[in-house]
Length: 261
Image 1 (tube, helix red, strand yellow):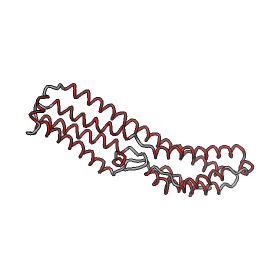
Image 2 (tube, one colour):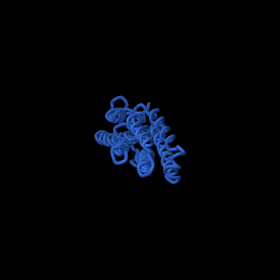
Image 3 (cartoon, rainbow, N blue to C red):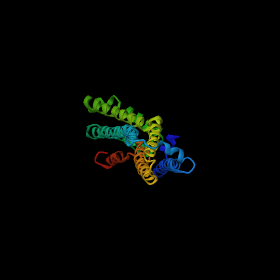
């Protein structure tokens, strides 16, 4: 259920958070000051403010840990993309700088980049890879592995090409792994529930005055919705409104129109 919520558009993510926290806030206010249960709840007056602080600190800590996990995954994804781009650039540059004709390598290189940009980037929104990108990479690696390259261009160039091509595959594997990785639903459930418990704690502290009670619940609910919503938008590095762009790979395609391409 939580994963389905995280996959929703940005507006829906915020709408559901708003519905949850303002509904629970309204329920707490009604229970605390309503004619039916209010008189019974009033007997709980006297809970001191530090009690609210202890629950709020737990909520803040877990929210911070959750945000840290998601931010770290996004940083790793960005590094994986940059590493892949750098190694692809190395393959292209070596193929152009070599004295031998490596047009076949550049053709396979271009096919791989196009497959990643057009097919695999879309597939990663669902945590999948693209068969076309896998096939294109296999073809690129097969072409780079040709023994004749060492004879025509030299062993050093061949070794550098192979190393760069293998690192492309390593970076791609890391990118795909991060695209399919999700924060544990248990962590999200704990944070969401602690948010509600913090609302309950606020309600217990402000039983004496209805206006202060509603104001405190409203301020916390707004803060919780904004904070958790912004964290949720970054849950998937390659999906949603806040995601990594394939622009660095698209820039590589411009090399095909340069000298020696």
